[in-house]
Image (cartoon, rainbow, N blue to C red; front, top):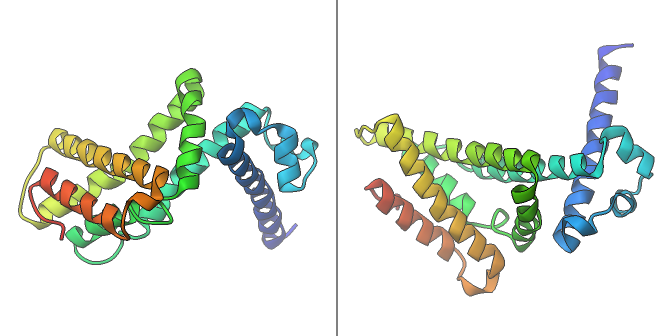
Length: 207
């Protein structure tokens, strides 16, 4: 078998697995975790239930994979807006993207709410929550460290962790309200509030 054929088969398998995850996410957003049955997921993905069992040993494994996929995808989508310009520009881009559609989205908040109870009851889901929280915060903390260095400021690793945690809390709160109440804010208002608040935490303007 050629490398091209192996690559094609591997990518096709990954695409099918992703399709199952996306179908599960659709149903969790609409009906919660309990409403996302194996039968419903199979129907949404237009596959047999047997195909789901081929990739996932249980519904719980599929739900866990869907949760991690969703949370990491939001961080990756946010980080894509923080690649260009100065360190401060990259940090500004990250905060802005975190508080702007499509990251701020009612469906994303519905998914977060749908999974929340599972993270309290299931140790595996709680570990995914810890891991994906750290994935976002570590991105943010690295950007803060770079912006501090660029401004000629210094901060210990412990201090940078505190700053990253505080800035993350501001972003999380605004993200939640923006997704839950999308009509309560003007275009760009959430991002503006976030930039002002994170700048106040860091001690320099991100404007």
